[in-house]
Length: 117
Image 1 (cartoon, one colour):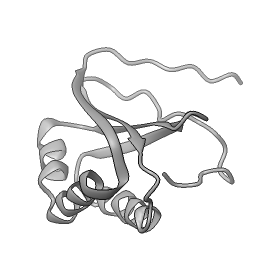
Image 2: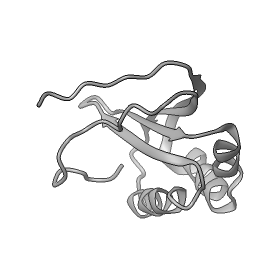
Image 3: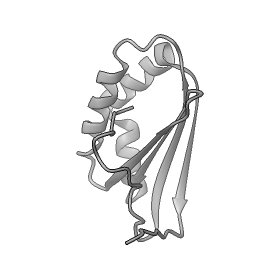
Image 4: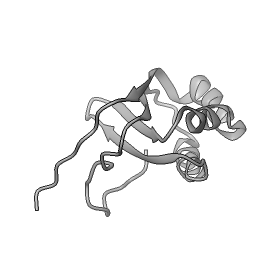
């Protein structure tokens, strides 16, 4: 996951529903050679998908990682899922970087946020 320590910590804004989320939860292996570079490339690549809205990341001290991708519609999510470079990264992740993972895809029907002024 990217180091976002210099940017203020803020969740992605609440969007007008409906939209889609892809929740990717991982436990990584000890072998992480090339992971950071590939992760940075995926973060750049997904930004080119029309309908991509943003991404949130979290990592627990125990090693559980969560990435939530936000997409305007199912077509945008499908374009990301089927992108050739992303598919190659997924294969390498299964072969090298992940001990386990889950992916949950959901259509968001309600969304709101709060920001202390």
